[in-house]
Length: 452
Image: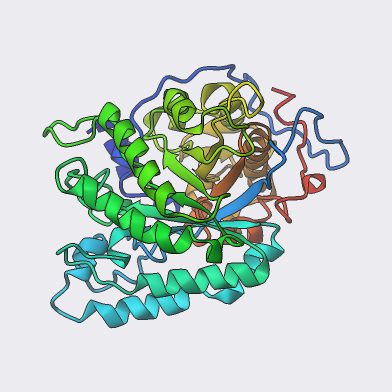
């Protein structure tokens, strides 16, 4: 455990809520690319044309997506109300409760937290896709204490998406043995995914998922199945963890198993990059995809890009956050053109950063400030942002979106409902994202990356 990360998390306020696994979430990474020297917020320029080099990638439909996190896989930091009056801290311990029957509580959450009206709202905001996390236990509990029942609601969401013209990624978010020991896997603690029989059990669950959601009956709405979300690619101090070479061998095996039972020829099978960046997956991608074009490649990589998960991110001004986002094209993504055929998606990102904004638009790093009128984004709900804080976060948001438009096949913001700067609902209410999201003419800072 990195002590600096632990200290940073202990100092974080309630409104800067983020995943409880942030201590482990991403190891310190090398950061490359230019760093902006100015901390001044650039003026909005809504009439400027979008840069000519910004494209939607290949001819296939670009995915403007949102994660429906916290629904079918509980995460305490996102679902604090569900965890009230209990010592449970993840899905495993919640489902293990003996003081009450957890099933009615789960049913209440599943039936009310996300409904068809939410899908309509997502559509009205210009999104055309949803990434829906679900755990293996929705299909087979494998002797674990998890409770089944979530699959019914996944099916409902898919039907709502079909009705309203959205695509769906079915995301295998929690796998047998836990792929990372994070809360988001359902079981906070041990990492035993690569231990027998968990590897094979994971494939068996994927086959069950693929037979249904990869069938021609769902071809009009389900366009992706993700093999596993956020597996770590390193060993922990206790010896647990995952070996990347073994993981890539498993990925090829899992891809083949899924592909063999699907009848949807356009289904994309996606693997998270295991925090190793997409570059590490190009050799496997070439072996699986062969000589097909980028547009028709059946295997793709998912990468997650956050800027509040390592201690060094808390030292950045807004201009430096923006420069980092603009540099993702070369530092974290792959050229989405004829030079290679491994599609890359940004499966998760957020607007959560630790900056403080002064009334004159200058910014400082961190979560505390003393200048008169200064406001720290992580210490306030977006509904409380002052105009200059909104402008700073909007700049950061548009820098990300413009980069993803240029260098990815789509993106999915985390998440539809979440605290503070993590929530799409909050962002749209605060106008820190363009509305609709898919209309570049609504961008206020269309040249933000060119100005770096």
